[in-house]
Length: 198
Image (cartoon, rainbow, N blue to C red):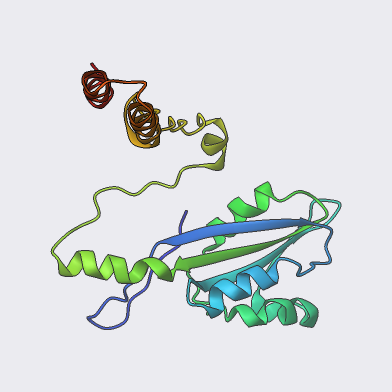
């Protein structure tokens, strides 16, 4: 990857985590069905599109690469709401790498997406004199092979002589005692055994 972050003057621009993404679609007439989801993320400030290129590969494998403003009017209309900044951060080497993976007779949108949601957290860490010592993106292939999350065991059943069970048994003992079935001594002993589990 040769994507480069630029800065102006003596104050470097603060960026959140940036993802290089190439989205491929079969056929060379790009359709914008996925755009509403991206529009929502842009409009609510979750992400920002820093750069955007369109790659087209025809049935013979011939490749064309264009910045968004160089694309045809229909494609520009689809992507325009993303408010892509076209910073020039994506380099020719990046596009060549993406083009190698695009299948023939396909269109791909190559984007740099900044995760704005992480900027405030990043600034807070820096202000606290902290630093990022490690950051890794888990590949989807690894996610698919990960073991299922552990099952949480249900809480243990109430022990005899506790909770609602003990209340019910105490009521039964009281009724037997009131009816004269149990003597005072028997009632006291049975109640003590129930409460102590003895």
